[in-house]
Image 1: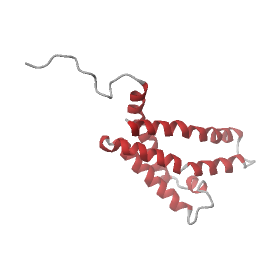
Image 2: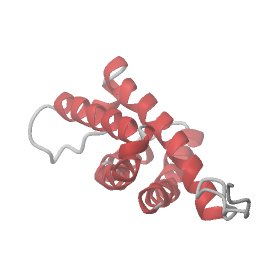
Image 3: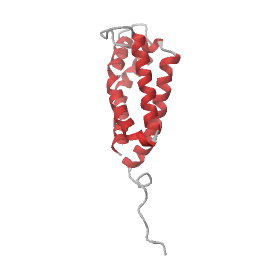
Image 4: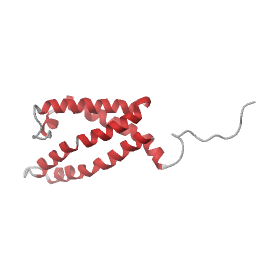
Length: 142
């Protein structure tokens, strides 16, 4: 005869914000990274412009390399077997591209022709890296 005692739900179904947000975080992080990674190839010029000028070589190389990295991390997050690794890779990626986000902010804020709303948008974008890193950490630690 089978055991009819109640069992605890699987980790994905347990209540608690960490488990739920971690379970959903991989989906939106993967989608965002896939979209942005693809954009690096479809429309590379805006990405070329934010490569810090201190880096040696052609900015397009960095644009394509970061696009490949974003597509790879997106894939790792989407596949259950590699999801935890994908979370750690996403943390590293978000930290790694932060200098380009700072460069974009410096360029836009220093441009007198840039619309004020765009300046506000790029300034707001920098602190948004924090919740993205936190979400990636939740995925990595599940």
